[in-house]
Length: 192
Ligand SMILES: C[S@@+](CC[C@H](N)C(=O)[O-])C[C@H]1O[C@@H](n2cnc3c(N)ncnc32)[C@H](O)[C@@H]1O
Image 1 (cartoon, rainbow, N blue to C red):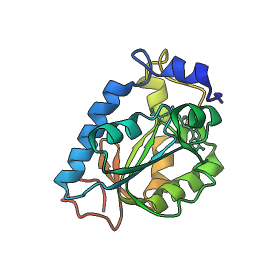
Image 2: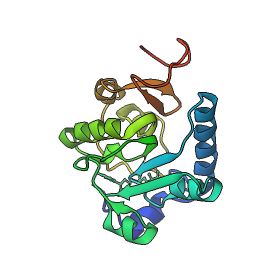
Image 3: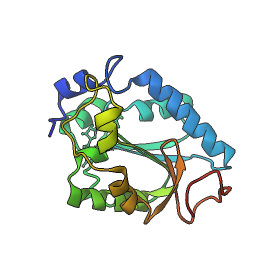
């Protein structure tokens, strides 16, 4: 498994990597505005495994009134980009947040611990979870192997769904809502 150090972040982030600040700006704008469409006011955000802190920075720059708590497991990332040092597999968030972001993190956590991590994401999510991770299928057929870390756990989408569905309803485009969350039209989100 990768070391989350200077070389790692430089190798996988930026124009030739998995994503960069500009792409996260588009994504965060879309998620924030979709939330508004559903009548969800985002006042608090938890970014889990925040890395270079792109989501935190987008909120700080565009919505400075939103409280953002950013966490990461890597001592290097916490020191360099100013996050709290937390391992989402063992840290049970003490409160909930309107939006939880867990972007490209769960694939690094082994099977036993990732189930606890999903439970912790559920405890933290009051309204919306933005979740992205590559599945076995994605790693084989979708991702660009030159810009993506392949030294991760290769699990199927069905494997993740089994645990996510205990807590969340899948909306789509990376968004998940707690089962007792905001009502959605039947064709707006998957499952019941
Ligand atoms: C691929 S980077 C993603 C960074 C950021 N979320 C982004 O998308 O720009 C993965 C990050 O997950 C963090 N991470 C890995 N395992 C973690 C864990 N158990 N708890 C919290 N963060 C973790 C790493 O330290 C690293 O910063």
